View 1 (tube, helix red, strand yellow):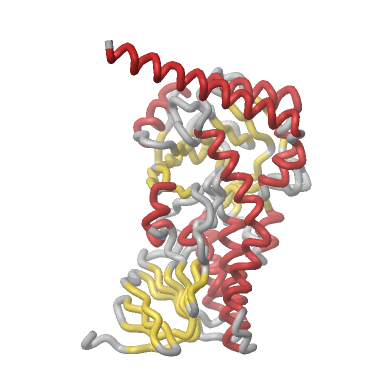
View 2 (cartoon, helix red, strand yellow):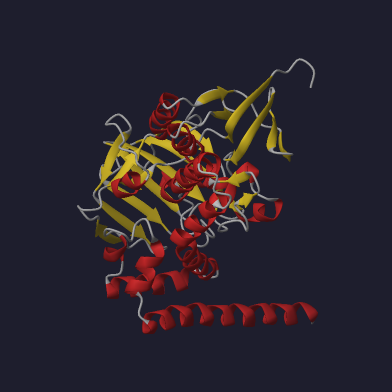
Length: 399
């Protein structure tokens, strides 16, 4: 492209979100020349993530958030079935679940990467990255060449066959008297929020992030209706962005190119969250780039892929299986499962030290085979009833 200057970097990262910034920090800290190309004009804006995470997970990422970045600490969770009778559980004091201001938090990560020597280009969009002989050619507002390329642009970079696992989602930042300062609320209803749920995450006194996701729903209209039922509230911000719940893509590495974060499908299939799983992918990818280039380890990039899968493959597999069951449930099935949860006091295990960040550990530890059979039989029975109803309706139309 005429008029565009050419710059060489050891590593170019497309996307200045959590995974990309952590990859940059790791690679630059080893002395590599690193460039981050972010299409938005400000790091952390728009703020698409609700920022609910455990301090333990952040420590695993090598991050200690500043007091300005922590909006609140969560003390309990209320989980509402369709009937409205909630299950209440207190969070573990050892776990310490916090709510982050992702705008402030991400800017802190950007400063950390920059302090190690990474260059950050804002308002530039990567159009194409193509591997050529010995380097990757990256086309943005300029032509750049790098030895390693890391794709971290988010769900927009997911393969076409994975787009169907995106759910429409939206969030309001709300000020209202009904908000409980230390309490996360989750509302489950297969009719109102098919395939997902609605959530309230408190930012502090009388302030919360109220969000919803679900298949084929109008998210803003759904949130408006919820606020009306709760008695209103002042909406001070609206954000809309899809969430991905389809599990990891098939390959994270292709020769000199690595894929991390939302782009790699590394968000939890259960909740769509990914601060821990996506962030750790960025850390591992940045370290892999350094080992590949500085130590001459030809297998280093593939080791990133294997390391991430070793940590998360089983957790994501179990979560995907649980999601497939959940998506088949009607409200009657959900109520029966809630009864089982109450009977076995299952949620207390989820909010202990490792259950919050790694859901499969919680599922495998607390569900005996008898309980699993109960849950599967509930779903199976409803599927059979639904099938009989469909057959009956078909026969009626043929008369």
